[in-house]
Length: 83
Image (cartoon, rainbow, N blue to C red; front, side, top):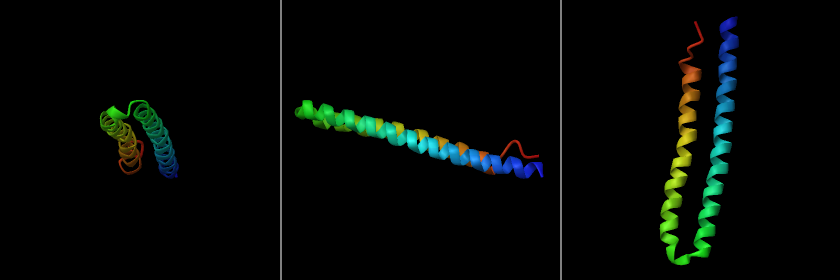
């Protein structure tokens, strides 16, 4: 009985982790892209540099939900709280 509660809480926590990470990454990607587009509009001759930096920054922002997904999977399948 107590293991069922722990497993249910772990699945719920994994869902919350996934939702929070995806919302945070979406917000971060939007901020990075909008600031890069503003820079490109102000200095069109440097657009290729800004675009490269934007792709690197978005890649770094997207690594966070991947790490969160791994933590959520470990929480569900290799739960240290289940006896």
